[in-house]
Amino acid sequence: MRFFAAAAKGTEGALRDELRELGLQKIQADRGGVHFEGPLGDGVRACYESRIAVRVQTPLATFEAPTGDALYEGVRSVDWSPWLTERHTLAISASCRSGALTHTQFIAQRSKDAIVDQLREKRGHRPSVDLDDPDVRVFVHIVQDRATVYLDLSGAPLYQRGYRVAGVEAPLKETLAAAVLRLSGWDRRSPLVDPMCGSGTFLLEAALWAARVPAGALRERFGFERWACHGDAERAAMARLRREGRERRAPSAPFLMGSDIEERSVEIARESAAIAGVRASWFCRPLSELKPLRQPGWLVTNPPYGHRLALQPGLVAEFSTVARGLAGSTITLLAAGEEWARVFPFRPDREQTLYNGDIPCRLTCTSIRGGR
Ligand SMILES: C[S@@+](CC[C@H](N)C(=O)[O-])C[C@H]1O[C@@H](n2cnc3c(N)ncnc32)[C@H](O)[C@@H]1O
Image 1 (cartoon, rainbow, N blue to C red):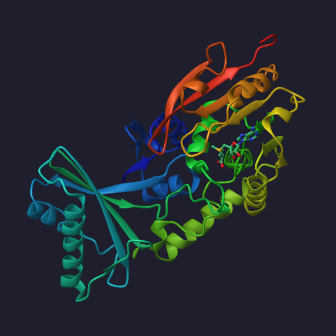
Image 2: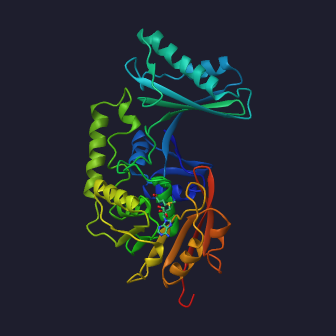
Image 3: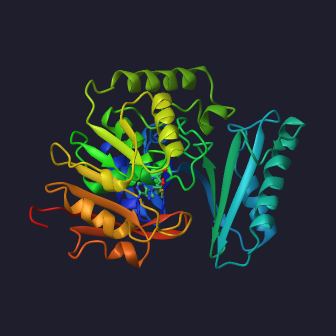
């Protein structure tokens, strides 16, 4: 089977490296994600283990779709019976670019008609639509009149890990935090701190990664577990995968510390850590009170940059002073805006653009040498 693992723009390279480490085959990074090939079990494993993929999908058919009728026939030519019956619910999303069909709602509607008509004809009843929590999700993507129909394996997006406590403004998506950690070069053993940790996403993801807990270990289920063809053999294979994941847990944990000026954020981070079953030290205190680390490590943070959270005057200068006191450590910063671009009077070792939703952010990694 062919698969496409979708990811935030700018994180495709990190996802490619991660999928390679998972031992998946024929991996190729593309815009917005990574292609790979293998048996269904590889797609399942990507859903369960990837920290960076937001979704995993498999293409079921590709055909010319210059008209609504051609689209209808193309979608109807797929045998839908392995995936859903009249007892399943269905949702279809569509996207299109540079072709005759330009309305995503029309594309989704015609595709849905093709699927339900086929099943009604075969079984006498049709599945119903559930846009919020469907059993089966289908994506129809049309580029220059060429349609590809994808079946989703993930279900709810993969950043929904199962540990998140709601209530914090501007939390980072777990998948983006995992990509930033990988791009930071953190070795999973050295101390890691986030002095503006908000709900603690970096530290929670770091703790789970260091402990070798699969990203999906806390999720109750994935999309593929709701398919019609998911039977006893598939359930046993999934139970085995989960058991193997639990058995791989690392015995020791690195020093992880998060702090934030907002008390409620720190409480939420602590509660999430308890749900995730990981340990970190949490403090409610301003950035200025960050103590030098006992041994060099990594500081990874995503400060306010004036989009969803206001940037307080003086915060950039304060961060610069604090960070430059951490000689020997690496500072990884995910931020947008001119102020953060000039935080240090020297160039970062590495920098690249990553998208936080639709906001382009700069990811910079800077090692602090003595005397800076
Ligand atoms: C963009 S949010 C971080 C979100 C976080 N990465 C998460 O996933 O939830 C920035 C955080 O910086 C905190 N902050 C702002 N000024 C601060 C300061 N002077 N000292 C410590 N934390 C501060 C805010 O309270 C906020 O939680």
